[in-house]
Length: 133
Image 1 (cartoon, rainbow, N blue to C red):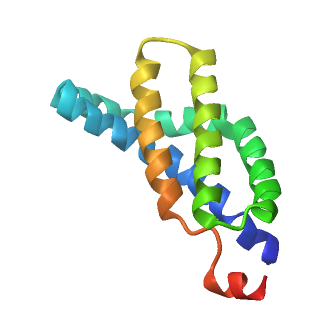
Image 2: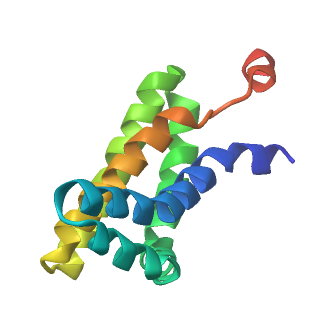
């Protein structure tokens, strides 16, 4: 049970980023390109999620290992979240460079936005586990 609670932050952070990234791309399309582009993006939502899950699985393993190592060493939650978000953003940037392509710049920025916001909003530890530690 304790291990599931520990892995809650990295797993939620990963899933929310994958699930909400296409919506951020659609918002980008609405504000900077066209509403029709947003409709196109949302019509491929499941495809975005499927490819996002597939491409990011190896990065998730690295992210979880990094989280488990840093969680014990860094007690300041804001610093821990900031470092984890930076590492996740760096891995995402490297993955997008590996995949390359013109559209990946928009995708990377959209997912980066969701990654940062969700990373700071998700709780790492519950108040009970902080008092027990």
